[in-house]
Image (cartoon, rainbow, N blue to C red):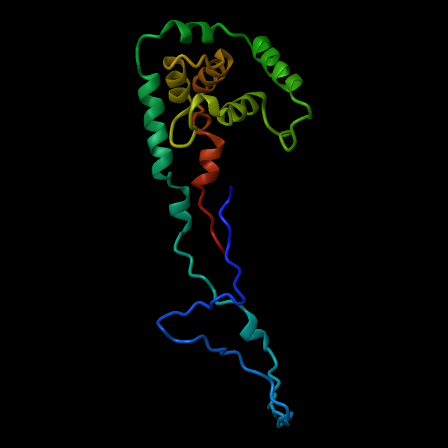
Length: 198
């Protein structure tokens, strides 16, 4: 049987620090007070065109510095030279050299058919550049920023991720025409670009 409760007439109030609780809320008085109207001085200032014009930003970058390669570009060029300077070609590079343009076009057509909608803003790009940009955004093969595309492909192959052989074929064809810029990911270019503010 549950215990019975005592019936009390009034519940005791809580007190903190042995002080009774006081109401500290301000109460309204019975007589309304009249307030003096506040007089504000309003001065109208007109904005001059000189005041609204932002201060010119000094250009710290001149035309000579913009044409010089950044440290990221130099690092990627060194990676490409180191990867492609190896005298012996492994079997994957040999098979990539045998890939024809028709196989590359079939690879890209299959990629396009797998999409639900056509790619936008890539009308002016070459087939090789489209394939390489798609390769850059394939995150399952590792990060693309700060590493050459050939080195990324070889690293993914070494880790057993099975990167597409057509990408290596495109990279080797671009290297054959001495296009070093094709070894740098487009996303890497965007992340480390330099802007000149006039």
